[in-house]
Image (cartoon, rainbow, N blue to C red; front, side, top):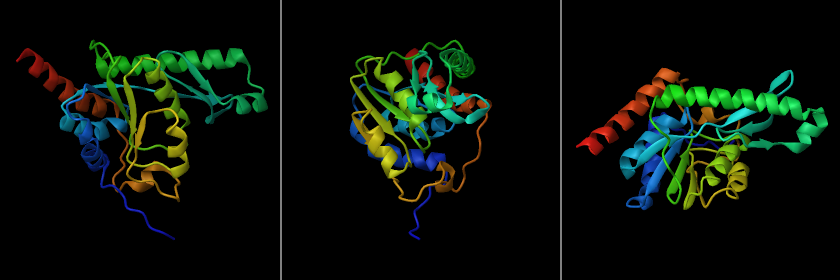
Length: 223
């Protein structure tokens, strides 16, 4: 079996992405991190590019009595991306989808409030937007995020992830202008297998990381 390399942790993965993303230095860039795991990956990129950072939170819509099965996904704007074949085969009603999507949108807004506090969202219209996560498996949920970002009229949309299956990357390339993914293994079971340290992060961990970046920007603006 062919062996693939692994990242030490999310920070190292972000440093490797930052090297590749140097080409965007000097452009009007906004990095959108996908919490929780995408935040520590995004930080080295934000430092390298000296750019603004914000969040994009997609949420899976699970099937009735089978929450692990993704019927669809949704972001803060409430637009739902569905798997129509699965919805039809399971006989899921529109009312269930509407109710489930509303629950997930409320959870997204709650998390954004926890992470951002009173900080307003960054305006991304007409700017180069880089969406960053710690890895992608099937790509369904991140597709909802990318489509949500595209509706906000960025000048250029880039997806940057440390690891994802080759087939997933080919599919996601249709949603963006550029995909950057240094590690695209043929044999893929889960994102975590490509990290030596893949510890779970809490909301408090994420909030502390974000305050480091947002606090620094506030000092620069006031200075």
